[in-house]
Picture 1 (cartoon, rainbow, N blue to C red):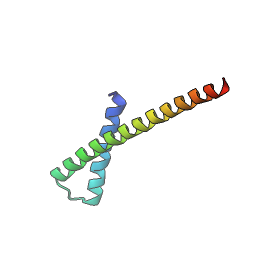
Picture 2: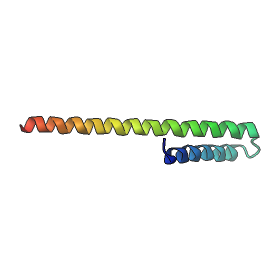
Picture 3: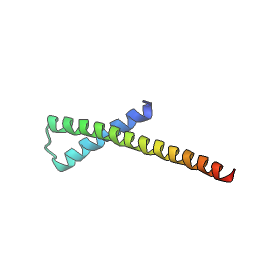
Picture 4: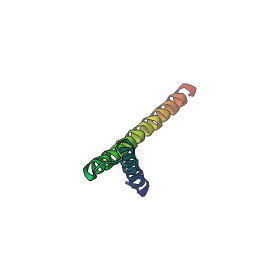
Length: 73
């Protein structure tokens, strides 16, 4: 994991806490903490999903390149 991964997770946590405060201005510590954990974990899951999609796209591109080379020969 790189530093950008951690920055994304922290940004997710901050956004979730801000959202919780907007929904409930009197939100307590536990509510904010739960929002922070959910945002952190959510950002991590989204990042993993994007990485998986990118890997699949690269694999498809590689397969198509190999198929194109076979057809030209």
